[in-house]
Length: 158
Image (cartoon, rainbow, N blue to C red; front, side, top):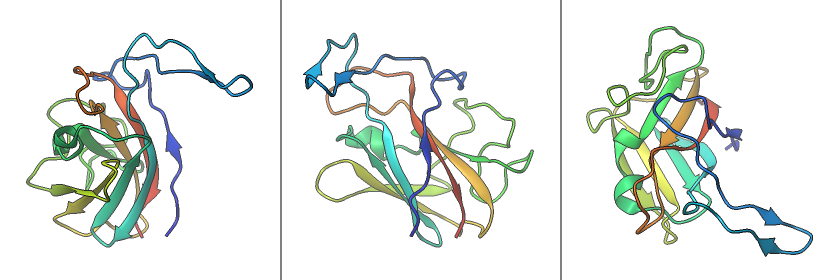
């Protein structure tokens, strides 16, 4: 299965706010002070079955937030009105009323590191249809509330 392009969406979502993440100087191996807790970011998204996506973050996440459908959106990148698994049309913005819900997806942890999750949709993902997954509000275990994004990834149903 193909790895999908992962991009940050900082500053592009009205419901998410910008946050500074740690910087590392590769030459000196020195980590600079960070103004806020490091935020888990999406590192990979892949379709693993006709109705399943696997999401992996760069670090362990709070399991309650990782399995909450309200922290995930699927945007159609080719249609004005959301269809199939999409909750957003191509020009829609993320908000609290258009996220995924327990009515259309279940999410479970996979692996032992607390970094990967499987989203199982109630219907198959349309083959050839282009989407973008957007994730917001997910923190690492024990971290304070976060109102920003965790990244996004474009994918095409297989």
